Length: 89
Figure 1 (cartoon, rainbow, N blue to C red):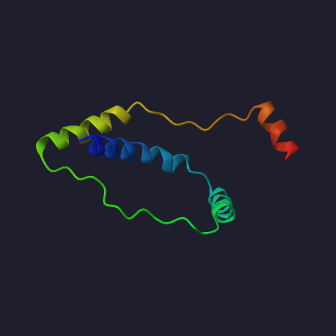
Figure 2 (figure 1 turned 90 degrees about the horizontal axis):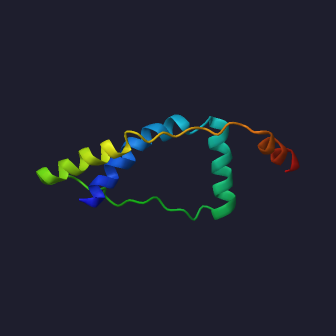
């Protein structure tokens, strides 16, 4: 049941992450970093996700969604310190 709860929680948060994800330029920069850092050695996880099989599993799904309902992801506000760090790079 824990896997099903976690899967439901992550699915609910994934909606916010997609909105937070950034621009195509950000995605291109991330792909370049991953290629430089790991040289293409990353492998996609092909395991099957947890699936509800009985009524109590659906309770876990509902509990996971409810637990994630008040989670909020926000982009940080640019601060003077953050701008100063960016100029040093």
